[in-house]
Image (cartoon, rainbow, N blue to C red):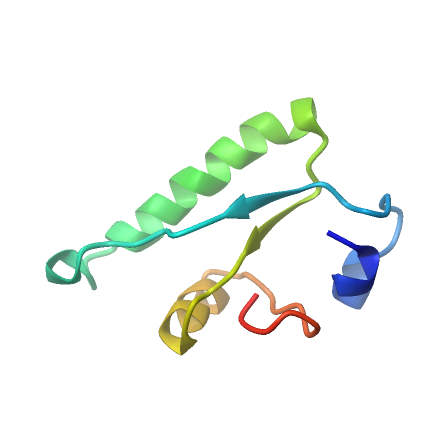
Length: 88
């Protein structure tokens, strides 16, 4: 990810481009939504990312939310939008 695409506070002291983990297509079947499974799955994905981050030099986790509901899910779970990239 280019530093120009990072939010301001994330630009300091990082290489350009910045290595990131792309978290893609995280979803729960509709009949099982609103039970906390999505948050548990996200926590697991973050924990695994943290485990490998040191070895592979990753500085961030990037998501591409496909719609407003997904964006709300990620912002509710402490992800921050990166203004140049819509729904990230």
